[in-house]
Figure (cartoon, rainbow, N blue to C red):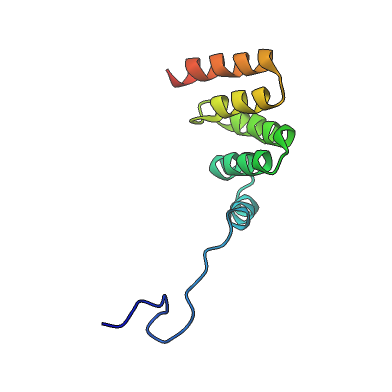
Length: 100
């Protein structure tokens, strides 16, 4: 048995998956209101150390779809990262009310 070398039958190198940010940009180019892509973009911005940008993008997600799963709780987390306890509690309460 030949060892698996991640090449297709014609010997071409394997296809690489595009980075998440590339996929998000492509999705938003097609539909600027794609809430899934916007949610991922918010997470990417927060992960890159920009929770303020993440919050701005999450606000857009919540305008488009106020019941988007996990958005309010993610917003709570970002507010906590910024030391904004009151806003975090408000986001948590909204999340509990929305997802109950």
